[in-house]
Each structure stands twice: as C-alpha cells, then as structure tokens.
Image (tube, rainbow, N blue to C red; front, side, top):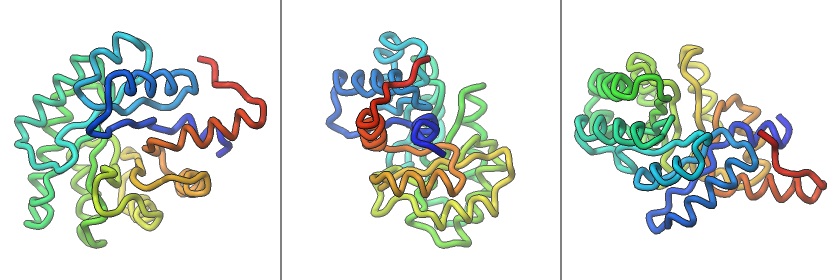
Length: 226
C-alpha cells in the first residue's frame, strides 16, 4: 500500500479519558479532510460530532476498555451510539469468560450486540496481550460464530498492543468474512506499513495520520478530496 491507501484504512482515533469536545471535533475534521476510514471517538461525543460532520464515518467504543459491563449494558450502549450517529462499534469482550473457557457466552454476547445495531459494523476487541495461542484461536471462532464483522487486537489501554504474529494467526483461523483491525502501539511509519502489508483491513491509531499527513505535505501533496 502507498501512503494514501494506508490513510484510507485508518480509524483516526481519540479515546484519551481527558479528551475534550473541541479536541474530538478536530480529530473528526482531520479524518474528513484526509479521507480516513473513520474517526474513532468517545461515545459521549458521537452526537455533536455527527451534527458537525454528518457525512463522516463515526466509530465509537462499547464496554471500553475493560469489557466487564453486563451484556444488557453493552447492548444499550451500542444502540445509543448508533442512534446518536455512529456507524461502527468497537466492543470489548468480557475477559473473565476467556479465562473460564466460556467461549459460547462470548459468541452469544457478540451476536446480541450485532443484532442490536443492525447494519452498523461491529468490531470485537479481544485484547490479545492477555491470551496464549490456543485462547486466541478459540476467540477467532467465537467472533466468527457471533457474527462480528471484525476482530480487533487491542484497546490501546492494555499492557501491550498489536503484534504482527497475531495478525498472521488471525488470517489462519478466521473465515474470510471476518476482517482484521490492528490497534495499540502502532506509532511509526514502518509499523504502519508492516501491519498494512500483513493484511489488516483497518488500523487504529491516534498518531498515524499525523505521521502520514506530514510526509505527504513534505512531498507537496494535499489532503484527499471526497
């Protein structure tokens, strides 16, 4: 992928707990100007962001970042986010169910949230840094069985982020209809290129767009036109 193609698969992200509405709208403006895949923002800012940028693809998070909200709460969060203008939901699984090998309950929760949001895209965050290969393989099956549109590596709030080895494992284990999003710790141009080349359909990052935009501007190139 060239730099513009990588920008086109970015979820330009601002999920800092201290983020303000003004900062969030600036991220949305950058996402719109550079034609990223989405702007991934906090749920509380979805409605004003949708009002300010009605044609921008907005993504937000559910059960974030620890995943231990009740399923009913995640469903309510997801429905509210879609009603406010989000078109994509990144949901964190319940980690205790992985430790207890309750993969059927994970798949059931994914299915319930997916049903609640209708045509909106559901990305399922499994926080790969906590699990061994057997657990990650089982989680791939759970995401597929639950009807998740994407599997996502990380929240960015865990002890480690995306790893290329996990992308390779996902590609071996997932059916073709489940796509892959890498997120967490992807902070250099080289890392961006590696994850794109590895087959990620999305990359979530808070600083990737700044790196790529600066490079393109040095080359005399302007933001993408929609």
